[in-house]
Image (tube, rainbow, N blue to C red; front, side, top):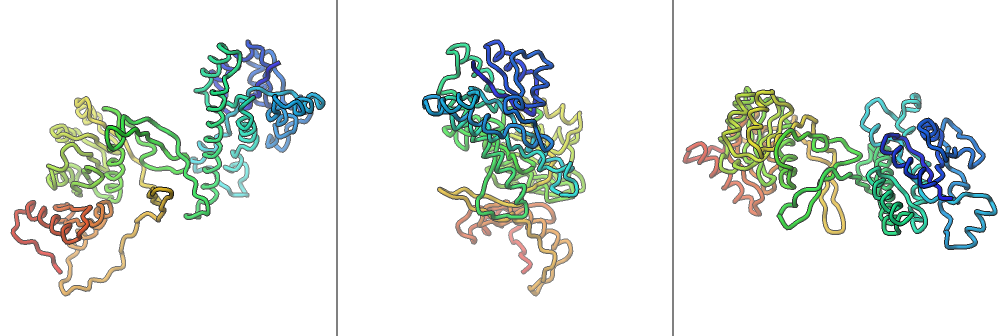
Length: 459
């Protein structure tokens, strides 16, 4: 008799349909308490509760359900080795052919502030959502994929059903693929737990970065490069939880520019606007209202802003939407949109409209190099205790302008120079190998913008 071990937290119609299929194919279904009751209620006939199989009840409030030699021997037995089969027959252990598990929702609970690791509040502890038996059974099944089919993903039910219908059992090729998905999942799961417990440790001995694919992208930085977008399973972040309301699918370059634009304007409490092109700010400005901030931003460098990304930090109004629609832009980012403004923006078929509202959460920055990765603390330094050492003293307005430029220049590639007039950039130059060239280029742009023949440096 063929057997499938089912132990799931998430019970849904897709799961029931798949198990009904196995039931019709004369698989005996072995399941844990909650899953057993669910399947029994829904009429699965050939059903065995795991506690009957191991002659031992669940214990410690369900912490131990499946950790037993009768289960693991049934999963790990090598069917091609006579001594393995002789052993399990002697001990009346049932061989298990399919292991289907989904975990306690640690990833989902990770983002709920009500969960803690406070021992005084153990009933509400995130630690209760660390699955032990589930990953262990899946790892055992994946190790023995020559003989056992491990299933972690509901999207694989169809593939398994198709091959059982065609061959009578899943093919070795499919079992190998599913085994790989098991270790892909369990490594991500363990990484999330590790990072949660080591929250205060920026530079642990082993660095684990866990990401889940959100979407395939049309191409990478260039059309000949394949690409995909992954989101963190561990960390929150503005670029993890944005929503696209309209427009073409996002590209690799769109996402990179969106990240820069949102980081720039998220630094300001006043109405702020920023345009970005090729990962570099084109124009940034603050205003008394969002219309003023937009007009100052776009006038900073209208040529470079053409075909770029525009971000604002307060809702887009009907009036601003009309102005935006007169320009060619690839993406608009805003925390919200007035309905009339959104309707106006949607008149442009291809314009990507993004709703984004979460603050920047980066504590660390990562730079991939060949064979390694560089990690550093994010640059959140902002001087409050400063001393002016030049002969010329600065007015409060000039100090404010300098601090504004300091926040912008963080997101311009070195050598980077930002020239500001008030709270508006009038010259930005970055990526120059020579700092004199960078300064010269930024000042030339500022002079052109301000129509001056000479620029006062105030030093």
